[in-house]
Length: 123
Image (spheres, helix red, strand yellow):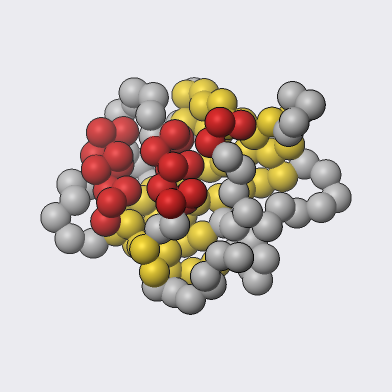
């Protein structure tokens, strides 16, 4: 079970998912990758939701990117290869501000997917 106490450092899974989503090259990706180690979870989007608000402070560089959703989207597939959801990274003021998991279907996931089940596309 994930520790729901906030603020807290990113879990190992949260770090791996963010690194996967930030692995392609796009404007600001390098700076955002450098922020992952300094990022902290400051809130959850619901009692069982794996989506979290993030805060990055300290000397990590700001990314030269507009506020909002990153152009890199994670497509989550299930064991049968079907589309089961998407991962979005939000940025505010050049800093990582949230990691969001959307899902398709009736049952909301309670944890992030394994990064091996995530394909990343850049728009």
